[in-house]
Image 1 (spheres, rainbow, N blue to C red):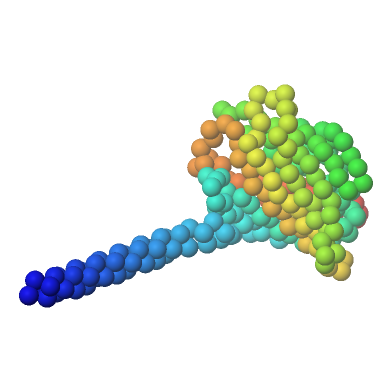
Image 2 (image 1 turned 90 degrees about the vertical axis):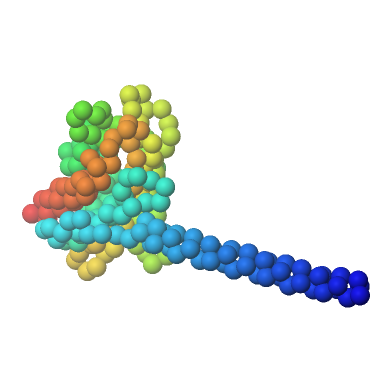
Length: 223
């Protein structure tokens, strides 16, 4: 009789243990699904581009970037100019302050056939100070024969009071008959504690004004 009771007790305990294990697994599954459902929108949100400005044939998009409070931008326009004409202007770094928006100064440091390093000081609104960065610019041909200019910020001493935390992007040139489509992407972060509400809503103005000036310079070449 004792043996029978023991067996019955073990059977009941086994069932309870099985139910507990099953419940734990179910809870883990539910928790996993909740985490996934929360994470997916955030991932897509960081990759979603929103049109911030569409004027004079220039479109500027902005996007949140994962692990950054500051937006990235992507500007697109088509100009009646050759790839060579555009590259000539882009390689003349010492003249950037004449047309590159919010650029206080720029200076070429070194130059090779398909690469150049330069120093650039970005103009920030009062009461904040300008910030500097050493940049590396590589000129590469993509597999589909498009010209890509890769822009990378370099962590070197700039002898400035403030240097940008980071700055990375690219310019893509896509010839199409007599026209060339230009795409300009950049994400940067200042080292000063500049409020995001001051930078993010206005970040589209930098590439927009830059493209307007670039197009004017290219139009002047063809007249």
